[in-house]
Length: 330
Image 1 (cartoon, helix red, strand yellow):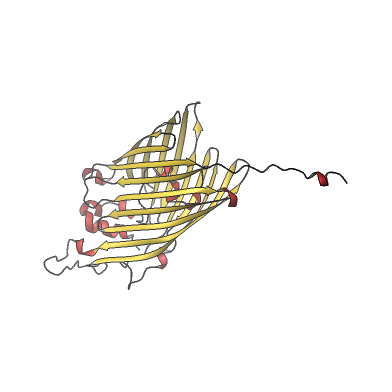
Image 2 (cartoon, rainbow, N blue to C red):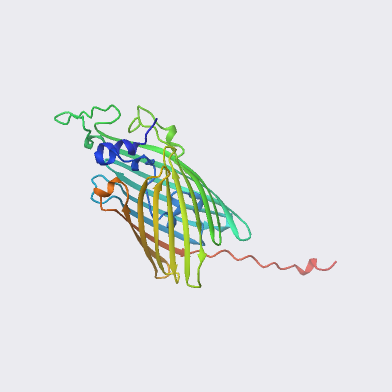
């Protein structure tokens, strides 16, 4: 059975605590983010142009603090609607460092919007590149020899810096209305086709990632809104489910909680979330993950910050029809 590259590196970089954990079995193509609901375009290109605004979002996550080699991730997305062609376009830039592996990606996204009376169905695609880098000279294994010439005693691991640049593509569907949001997407569809013993960072085969997202806005009162959401993630080897609830008071103050677990019954984390909208266009939010897995004895949880800027984009007004008097009478 094929394993993800992150699973392999976790054993090498994190030691016995990681060896006994399945936390790394989830595919390493995409970083883990607790506040996924504030930036759905990073996992679904069809979410571009969901709002009548140019939206730019920065996610920064420091996972499993105090655990050497734990993931540190950043993602920047920016997208806006293009009303004249019923579409949206944007850009995604990502950087993910886990142990001695770094994945850096740049992708452009496009979404076509089919508008109905009170809802929209979006079909999105993204394409770009991913640079994968592995510091083989910094890896160690329990049975390796590191006196003089590096020998990991593992033919799958390089002993020098290895870098490759691969094409990347994603597809998605996204339905959104006044309250309901439903999305389905498949990411990194080209990576399984790129594995080559001559050029690949390692001999490990990659799997695409799949996402299913559902969110719903509930107006509790004129000032209080409740937004529950669920995100299902899979790399075809294992699956994770995030369940999240956000309260928004007076359209300014946000507070909520989240739970993350595996479909095999193992728990990952519970999270607390707080945020604030300010200056009319800006939002900042913070989440803290309390680790529930075996790693809770060697880490101090996970920190995540999201900064979002929203610039409204006005819809074009429908032109007023004026009949030419020449054709009013015969």
